[in-house]
Amino acid sequence: MNEIPIPFLDADDDLTPFPPADTAMQEPNGLLMAGGNLKPERLIQAYQQGIFPWYSDGEPILWWSPDPRCVIWPAQIKIRRSLQKTIKKQKFTVSYNQAFDQVIDNCGKPRPGSEGTWITNDMAASYCELAHRGAAESIEVWADDELVGGLYGVVVGRVFIGESMFSQQPDASKIALVMLATCGRFELIDCQLPTEHLMSMGAVCISRNDYLSALKTLSR
Image 1 (tube, helix red, strand yellow):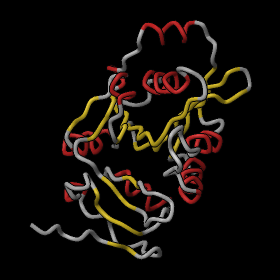
Image 2 (cartoon, one colour):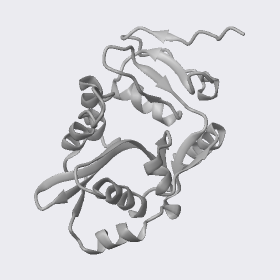
Image 3 (tube, one colour):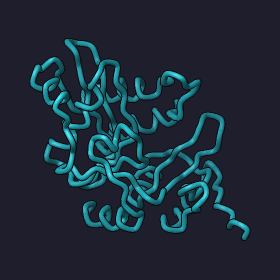
């Protein structure tokens, strides 16, 4: 059976709406649309509909809504004993929205064993603009005055849609995630795609329909 072609928008197209998230392709999982731009209004519209951009430098912007969706219910965050001990030692300090640009810069650096990054310069600039507007936030983890870990994401109501995290010392990114889950502001953390690291901290996979329903409820 032939796949239905996905919509491809011109870079200056600010009017064409996203297709419904539940019409995303099954293979590759969740691809919905290509093209368009990363203007703040377009990004906010995407996240409100359960859609996010993910692409490599030199590619057109690709928009996704995968099924299933990886999430963490904050009350179900898993804090292993070793991590509890690290937190109690107070080796690290945590701040909120104090160094968003530094966090996204560190998240965008190539990881060991990887030659590139999906956080392009254009993407970093767009999310920094979202942060300036209060639609994106960061959590920073410090050792003395050195930034050693953190995460950033987009805020839609009581949902935190995590984009990326980094760690330069053991447990630094885990502490950022624990602080996010326990800050009392969010009822759902969207991790988008599962990883072994996230699953070990209590992440679960739910259907796209269940995710979209929760997003609609918690964004009010």
